[in-house]
Length: 261
Length: 234
Image (cartoon, rainbow over all chains, first blue to last red; front, side):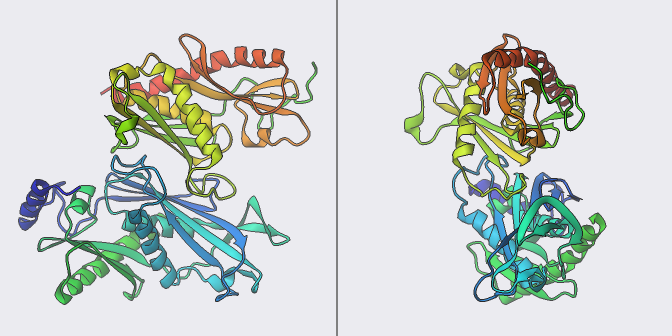
């Protein structure tokens, strides 16, 4: 929903360095991370950031590997914009927006080599572990990729392997062994509204964005995934500034995730 | 008749529910919302509306439409639940709607829809009843005009023994006959708005179960009201 008056208002305020909720341009809302919230999940996390509240759950299964990676486990990330979480969301199959959220979170985790998938091979070419992460908003007020990405990482860190009997999963029989986690690729989305760059947008700010860039960043500052969104183009200078800001912010967020675990 | 089920697996009394937690107003974006937890079964409900109903041909100029949607999150059960509606979830959405309809004054909302979205984040049996309890609080929280609460709990007959609020282990008892009987009731009138049964029970056992569940549902309705009062006490 594009509202020209709202856009003009947000823009005018941003020129003075003010946001609707009083934050600075580079300021996140307060992030709270709680892990182990779902007993039926192998790993789970609830992340609150302002009015946005996202729950991520990890389920494990055993399946066939992909033919091009016969000795690697399979990673699947799913997301849905639940109509429970916002009046704008509707029932039905996942919308393109939900698909983008899932794919961008997936890309960060996959390309950041978060999970050592080789260690999830049970029998080469026959059976491997499947790691299914579902990221769902309970309350949606913007920034689902970042908050959902944080929730997914925390849930993966929280996850425990299951017992296996005759190449079949024994549900409910959790072992003490964690998933083979090798990295923490933190996704940070930067929004461009007019000439301003902001982080952690609310729903209202997302509604008036010109362009956005999601950057997934590893511990040492290496980038492992990018996604540009929005209708407006970005200059090389814009992209440079956005990535610098994202790298800076990723360090705070990574610290928050480690504190919570 | 003698029962071989003389002690509950988790040590509860036969008429005792698992611990209940209820909260109103948990989803800021919704017009009304609630969380209802019984044991480990946790339901969230959000109400949006009354709002315009689309497509328009579904609109009724005489009264509003109540539309319920029950969904289990993929990680809410031991085996991952495939996202999207299933035959089971569609049936539960339908019976949830019927369970709530008698208390909602839809005549006040012509051409409109009141949407109720129920999400189960974790389940251990009794999820439709938890969903109905959460939805009922959420409708009241949204200011929808209602005649009363609807309270619901699953009742069961395990080898001729009436038990209240079956948990997952009890539902799956292998050597004993288990009947699962979810019941929803309008506490003030004792009218039943949801009644289903899976499993075997005699007619006499069914009526004993209904009698036994009445005071339990009245207590649950108190918990629901308390959740609302907590939110609005100022």
